[in-house]
Image (cartoon, rainbow, N blue to C red; front, side, top):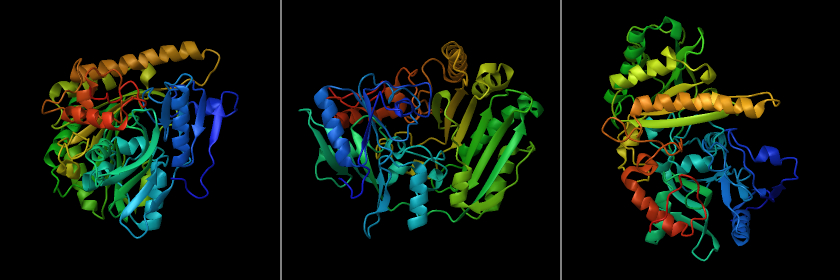
Length: 488
C-alpha cells in the first residue's frame, strides 16, 4: 500500500526531455515507443496506472532494473511503460524474520541494506545493478547459491497488482500461507516463473535469509589464449566440468565455492580466458585445492588468492558491462562437457573468431549443491539437478550517429550469426533439450530463437504455471513474446 513520503509519481510523455532516455534499458538493441512512461512510487500508484491503462485499452509493460535481454519491455508501441525504480525500499517487518524488498530495488539496494542494517543477505546475482523485480521472479542465483540455494527458496509472499476477468485492477498479497489454493498457486508461479506473466510485483517478502559472510577468499586466474594449445584448452574445460559433477552434492564441502569461467573469444593476441573464484568462508585451502584440480598443471599467467570483506567483494565482482547492444543464450548442464561441445568452443572462440564479435564470450557458472536440495516442483524452477549454468553473450556498440542505422544493422547481423552458429554447433537446432547431460535454459536469460521455450525453461512445471496464469491474469493483460500462456 501507499507509504508515507513515497515518491509522488511522474508521467513522462513524448515531449518530455527524459523520454528518449526512459524508453531504453541496459540492452540498447531495444527502444520502446510508448505513449508514456509512468514512474510509480508505491503500490497505489501502480494500481491506478494499471487501471487507467486497461480503461484506455493500452498495452502495459513493466520495468524494474531495465535489464531484460529481449524486447519484452520495450515492445510497447503507444502503450504505457510502468517504471518501478522509485520503489526501492528494503526493510525488516517489525521483529519478525521477514524482510521486505520493493519491486524496483536493485540488487545493490538489497545487499547493502540487508547487510548494513541486519547482517543478512540473499543468494542473488553478481550484477548488482539488476532489478529485483525480474531477477527474483525468475528464481535468482548468484555466488552464494551453492551454499544457500536460490532467492526463490526464501520467498514467503509477494504483493502484486493483477487484473481480474472483468478488467478490474486489484492489489493483492499472496504467499505460501495464503488461505486459498488459487492464491497459493499464484504465489508458486512467482518462485521462478519469470517476470511479466502474472501481474506487477510491488513488494517481495523473504523469510529467514542467510547470514551474510564476514570475509571471502577471491582469486582471478587468467590464461593467455596465445599460449594455449587445443589440448590445453580441452583439458581445462573438461576438468572444470568434471570437477562440478564430482563436487555439487548438497552436502559437499565445496558448497561455499563458486566459480565463473569466462571463455572470452580470442579477439587479439592479448585475449585471455579468466577464471574467477569466490569461497564464502575463511578457507584459502579450499580455493587452492579447487584451482589445482581445475588447472591440472596448466599455470595461469596471473592471479593470486586474497581475503576481502564480503560486501566489498560483492562490489568488486560486479559483472555489469556498459549499456550496449547484445544477444544472449543459455543452457543448464547435469554432466560434464561432451567432446563435440569442447570442439565447438574451440572452433567458435579461437579457430574461427568473428571480428565483429570481439566482446563475445561463453561464461560457465558454478551451480548445484544447495540449489539441488529442493524438489523440481517445490518452486517453479525445474532445473534442480544441474551442476553448471552457461551464458552465451555477444556485445557490440556504435558510437557514431551519422551511419548508425547502416552500421548497427551490419554489426547486429554479424554478432547474431556468430552466437547462433555457436549455439547450434553445441546443441543442434532444438537447443539444450533435457537429456541427462543438458537440462534446458534459464528463463532470466530469455532467447526468442528457442523453439520449444516452454519446455526448455520450465520442463514439467509449465502446465501448472499456465493454471497460475489463468488464476492471476485471465485476460492476459501482462504478456510478451515468451510469456506463460493461460490454461485453456
